[in-house]
Image 1 (tube, rainbow, N blue to C red):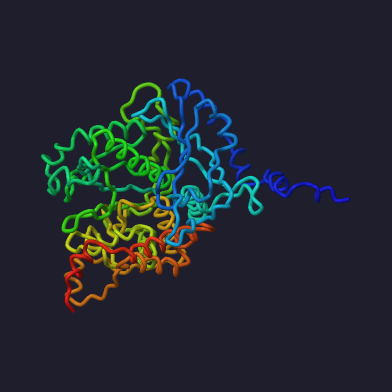
Image 2 (image 1 turned 90 degrees about the vertical axis):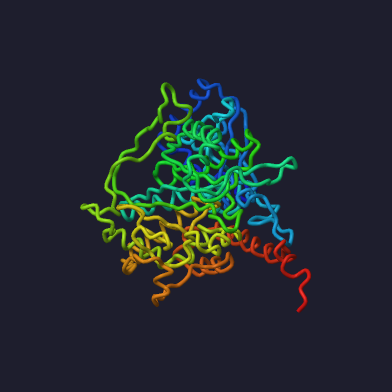
Length: 506
């Protein structure tokens, strides 16, 4: 008699899970010590609840909460949520859940203790990011990494890049966003300041908000280095020190959460919407990127004394090493490695646009010309009219990205473009020093990047290199969600339609 035949199939899957990605993740060196350190820190800080969070395909923060007393058990077993949580738990126009059906299993979210941090606005609560896995009892790939986990994907893609090239990616973002008034009905009621870029008096009007954001940010490991008032009503750009790609993405996600909290406290709207107003600048999120060898991780307490309100890793930045985008003489022209990476970006800009400009509204930014919107596939030295510019010796600025970006997908896409550029030694051509519009008038032939979401999605779907940034189920979930967004947009009658056609006599 075959005894295995009498054992339920789900128990077979659970038994085989012992050698899975999930099991190896839990057995990783130093994890036990890290979990214990968080237990002790919770007690010292008086933490009563923990938010177990992860990031959806759109960049939204999802997850569950649990009393702190359950931390040791959850650190060992994780929390479970329906797979559709990675797609914001929403349905398409036909009423079908996006990404996963209602009968799909529950994912396992395992907390990463190195991301533990107290919430400064609610000191009894802490947050921790999670890595996602398939359910232990799934019939297929039980306990495997969940490939629709954008954060986990970036960690693995970056590790593979480092292993093959001996370099790692550091990123610094410039997240623009707007502080808007909230009316008595709870809806948008105009900007809080006037659209005057760099005017200190406009900056000072928002200083109570800025001060609160900065206090919270520093308490959560964000080294806020500078900020200014930008060109739109209530528009601020507050910058964070650059770092390893994954930590930078976590910090941008944290920054958005902080802004949402401060907006609640001041009864304002903190919007990262790309283009709330036509005729003024949009909310961009330029990515300044560079490849490095070596360096040392250093804890930066950001002016704090005593015990840090979170794991050391939250306050850690990679310092030093060799910047492979920087010439020894400090010249603006990148060396061969940098040029090959620019070549990879030029080759794959249409597909990258789908990741950096990922909503229907993103293309309002690219269509409203005259505000330095990067609509042409070219690069230059300190040239803001190109999609890619050398913003300083040793770093590239990717400009076709806005503040609704999913930073985990964006960093993964840039790594794939760099990988291809390095592997094929792509030549980006000579940098364009002229204003791109003057160059076009002089006869230069330059292709545009995609002009709407559908076009960029088509470009991504046709680009096998950048598609590697969306492995496994990620591509299916992403395209289902974004194709549905385009479909809903095309099926919507807007105020513009009424103004244009309501009394139209053909």
